[in-house]
Length: 178
Image 1 (spheres, rainbow, N blue to C red):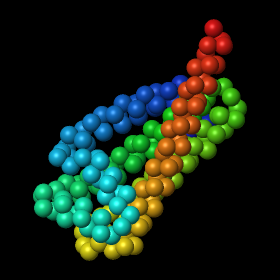
Image 2: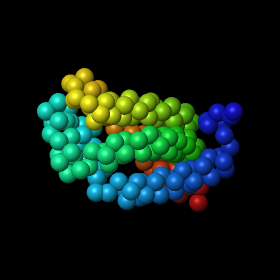
Image 3: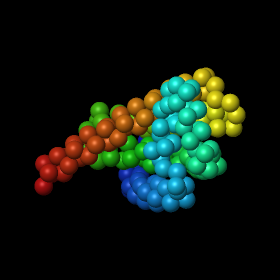
């Protein structure tokens, strides 16, 4: 199996667009499927940080009949983890190469692995949330969920910022060529 960083640029470009479209369609479809539960409600649960807050969120879902949707949302997220980590990994390498700047290209390879670390944090976070939703809420699960969510979001924000910087450099490189 060929390493992503060694893939030809044309293949990366195809994968980039395919994964971008797949991610957009998945986000739209999942949002529709999981209604009336919102991604914001799940994010509030991910970042609850305190047991009392997590219990209040779960009780609110139970009284609104949304507990089943919350569990479904977490299971759906396992598939999304594969999509977004793949998409951001390819984007990190593909867009970094567009800059034609050696340091950014190597950094793009690094970010392609960093995104996988975010995905691992997301899996751990999801398992901790499922434990809380399927039984008694324990401080350990709430803290683990919060720590993994904060780490995941931090890594993803860094990756998106890196991609944005690469887009600026690629645009500047393109302007200088013409």
